[in-house]
Length: 281
View 1 (tube, one colour):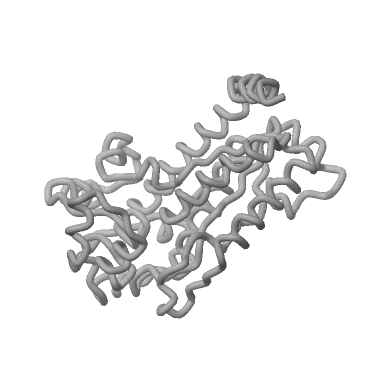
View 2 (cartoon, rainbow, N blue to C red):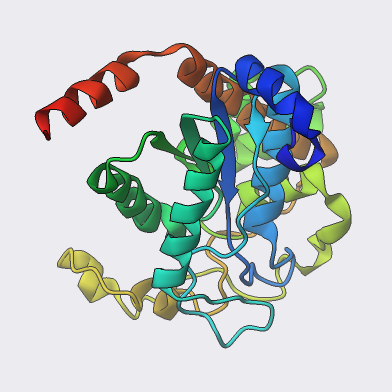
């Protein structure tokens, strides 16, 4: 159920059917090599969420496009907002979702760079002692890898599809950003935005400029951008097909359904949050 498509009188029933769960997709706008659109992290999570909601009813709030992207401003199409503004928008959005009757808000993350921001935000909800709970789940936390797709053995995968997936495993090719899996997700939901012929237009290999930092376990905001100046990290992915893309989307849709189904029925977090609030008196 899309929030914006509901009529006012339909919200009460929608809240009941969703068991108070509302999902907020959070992505970003940034370059993904030359073969994927800048809205990649928005496109795949939004479409996968819609498909999941058709199977396991829940309400989807309009997607948040402005994620953590303080770097990469040299690329056209990138949108950069301050951290303070992003957190304020998240805070007020969640408060409005809760004011309308939803007490469980799932931040569905489509951009790896958002992880720390969303974790910090969910903890800030505790500090504010809000009357709702925020949960986070990232699309990339359970990648639709070739191994998983082969184990699922989707009946529409052709022999050629399976050989492609097996080859990726055998050759130990890397995933990362604008990679095989991200390409599949977007190709599976909005193929007209993908240029498979431009997969090799730029390199997805690391420059290794910041390897020394990684070896010392030192975190720096420059490392990823310095190592992957084309905003593309991973090996080339020839062999992408409609079947492989479909299976990647299907796998991730199934996983999101499982997550929402769990949140709709669990009570542990509700009980503990009430107990925790009492301790703060």
